[in-house]
Image 1 (cartoon, rainbow, N blue to C red):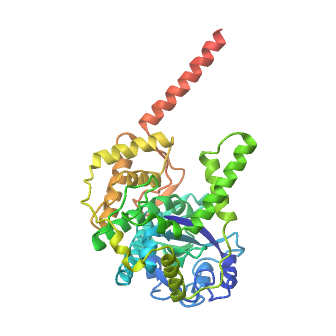
Image 2: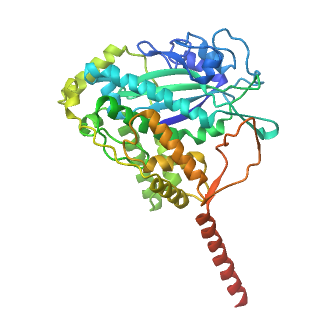
Image 3: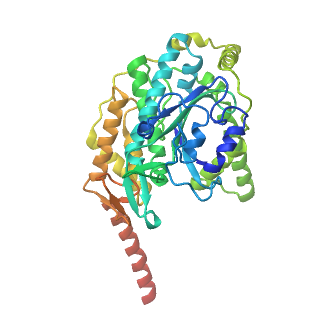
Length: 432
């Protein structure tokens, strides 16, 4: 999955001092992998390899990460309310995390290499739809660069100290348009987060099936799948953070039901779950060396009866891929979009396509991207889909701004029928 959070300009000192580590305090620590530059924006800045202390603060301040040269115009207020960057966090499925961190030693490097490569590919793919800047009154003029970049940090554990391989891609709030440095338009970035979280999972499954021969169980509605044959008890053992959130969520739901006699659902339940995540979030403790963490995890698993060195013997083999019928995927995706909401955007179309693909959709991660891109374009170009207007100007590109609304003919017909029914009922009432 992928999540997103703003990183305020005024939060740089907070990140540096929170745990008393390096200048990127929140993101790096003793035993963790050093930050490295990523993305097309870093290439433009000729920043590559390991990011030295102080680089993150300079990026958040709109400066060149290597020498501090001012790029973006300084903000009048550098408080935490102003955004210096965005934290795109990609989290591996629990099964893959466990294997990458404490699985059979001869396969750990391969799994970590796959995860790292697929994560980079995911953010690069996201840049093609979310690399936008805006300018003019009210940000009415949209400029496309197709570039995202910054510094990536890799963390191996959760706040509950379980194996949880995840990557923080700190995207700088900068875009270079016609030689001028402007801020990133954050709305396309936010709109594409869930879709690219699903894309990351699909690409990861394709590479694990190809390189390691792993098989996966059926997809869940949010595009995730468990490793076939992986012990459910081991997954639960190393999912303490999830258990904390579920217990708190259940407690809050029960309290609501006791008070009102009703059960929560929809957006109210989503909001409650978000509060459960926040209220159970423990402060990050002092960093622990990776070797010490690994030893503790192996011991914990052994006490529960698992030999992690033999973990690969549990897995089911990869099965032949199910064939993709493009017309069926497009029709199902459009049907789902029409049923779920009256209007939707490019990211929603991409999610609907991913939800209709087989659990292993292609032979490689690159093929997954190609398939998803092609089928999403077919959804958007379908004769039954209507594109809404745009109260802004797109310059210098033929790329489609991903915030434009779309709907379907069937949705409009249904809405017109509903309106007609109401008007006819009112008219009959007036006659009576």
